[in-house]
Length: 282
Image 1 (spheres, helix red, strand yellow):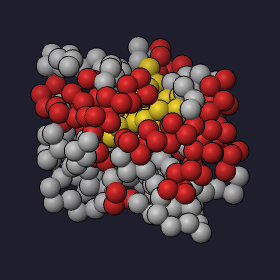
Image 2 (cartoon, one colour):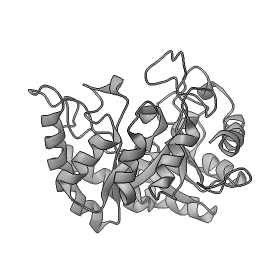
Image 3 (cartoon, helix red, strand yellow):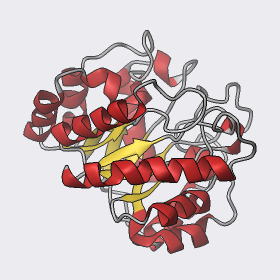
Image 4 (cartoon, one colour):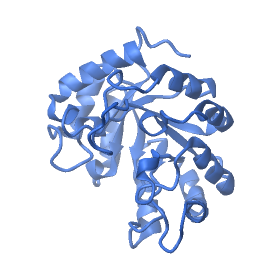
């Protein structure tokens, strides 16, 4: 396992950590200011959300690289299954792939969406999901974009996801059978999974992303009360051991949704604490 005690060159910021993924949250820093602050602290890169990019993907990607970092990924496709899929599902999904390509982001995250209308359980939704991902995979491959299926905590079942574990995601990967379709492992969503290490080992080179935060013991909100690393009960070192033991050596992306704590703080303070916690507890 990599030693980050004196080295945070693998650390990346997901801009959700500063509140940028929801309108009116956080300090409202521009992408340029976020880029400069991350570069000053020696981060490896940044993961943006589509709503922050608009029609500036090429410009923002170039700005990140000029600052000595990479655009590590992009969040996210539209929901691909469930009751909240957009009317032009494939058009919007392809547009998200185009944006990732323009940013030169190697990975586009897929949060799947929930249970497909007219179905029960998740098996049929997973089959439908696989079919839609299979349709998108060649388009993404032509643009050098990997698609990372992100399983979510079971509490999001029904409306946000039909994948709850890394193994669920791998089952969909097997149905799709495309080399650019893999898995993103997010501490918030998998910290409880006792089969995580074996699932990661099975995933191997299909592990496309690793997302850091913590699970608060007395969480006050399902979505918007994630903890800074070290403030919760997730075994962060064991999870990273499982991910890196499977061969993952990419960026470690901090993604914290925290409406009542971290989003109310000065972003500079959040970034400084993020670096310190990465070195000491992750």
